[in-house]
Length: 233
Image (tube, helix red, strand yellow):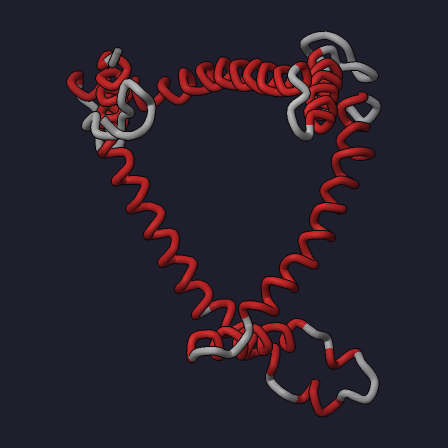
């Protein structure tokens, strides 16, 4: 059964926030603009409160999904055991400030807290390991991408080589005075600051337009799913 009330509430709140962006502030704000200013100042706090409940529901859903996988012995269920145990250990260490200053006023990031030790001794090494493995995947993907099969791949390869040469400190290497005299660093900085920046801005503009289009669809009630949950209604 479709429920239009959440969609209507979403549309009203979104329109209020959009209108609040154009509302005057200070002495120029008349009585008619006070509701918009109030919405702009307080809705973000309400969103933070809702986000807390969203985190709680997300944690409950994570536990339910992985516990069901463990109970039913689905493929790769030992990884679900690791996920559940890690989640509960970090949750308990953060909620009860284990090893740090107790109570609500205690800091969860205290240097002696279990939460901080878990982050520094477990999570940080795991991050370093994942990023070190990612480097090999990037090299492999770059090798496949830089095969010169068209003009675009040739430009990509030349730009990548120039940026790579610009990042290498030839000046500090003995016997490379010729290479250090070439303007690789200037060319590399130009590639990063001009073509690369232009491409990033184009991507950001595209993402912004897509976000606006999605927001309009949600406000107008077009971004909804059917009763069977298989697609837009």
